[in-house]
Length: 95
Length: 378
Image (cartoon, rainbow over all chains, first blue to last red):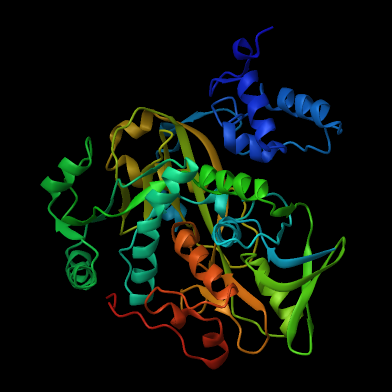
């Protein structure tokens, strides 16, 4: 299959061809690939793309998935509308 | 293992220093990083860039940095834009104080100006200005991608022969008859002719272990969140002076809001529900539509503060071949192009060309000669 047509990260529109090119350029750990390609930085927070990328990278480099370690998940796990945090007493609450 | 120069820390400061050295033909460099490149403050920062400071040391260093940012942007494909900063004031006394600061800026080549609420509305589409008494606009300020600013030059210097050693902790700098001769790591000794400590807050422990000096670094916890990406709404980074909170629509489109909560220094910050509450309530007063954006990610970081809130940059007079670049007090990313240049000059035995930069030598902490702010707040 044409790597330009395989979507790795749907949120940020990253293809397998982009991923291969980045690995070729020397971005060989998941943290760097995340920042360079924005894989896992969109609304899905990496739930769809990071595991795939980790496995692909591990296979490509002959490492285990643990060795290319997954970036830390940040809260919130799903995007949350900002209006849920509107409070009249916010000043007292936040010092 | 043996190398010419060991740089402790693959943050933006270490990478920019190595980049300047490589461009000057010095390539025998090993960067030793505790985790992965950018994993400290560099990748957590707000990406803002400005020269509108209140000391000559900061102003001159940042004026040079702002000359360099567009050049780096072009050369290493780093997204950068001179989108400006706007300080927002809800109290008359804050505006009054800033009139002196703007005078100081203008005398020193930084083109800030006082703006009325009407002018703010023009600079910042969709903003509600009813509670504002005025603001300060800095058109020279801007922002850049912190990810590309570090990763692209790093890939370049690695191609030129610089070695990056990741997941390796440096315990101390080895010193023999008053000269640095390498570093001790959790994976063994790396011998080197010169050593640069650019390890953020980690520098505190390394320097205490190596030379027995505590430079008084303090880690101040900071909080930041970002929304999903949207089309460009406004360009400048905005600072709400009253709550000391900022919002910036980063080049990728997300709205990044940063601030602090009352917290103890030097302790690892945790994500707290109070933070999104503060961020949202400060900024919906200006942008009611913010209520309908989605918050995507919340993270914490630090400002590594020095006793005078100015960085420690340069060689130490007491130990030969040992250099320090840390304590940027929240401004390391924006200063990194100029600091990289200055550090490369020091390491190659040349005199840096930026005015007042010698005031930032780390010796000043030991000798008690702290940098004084010229424009006094309040």
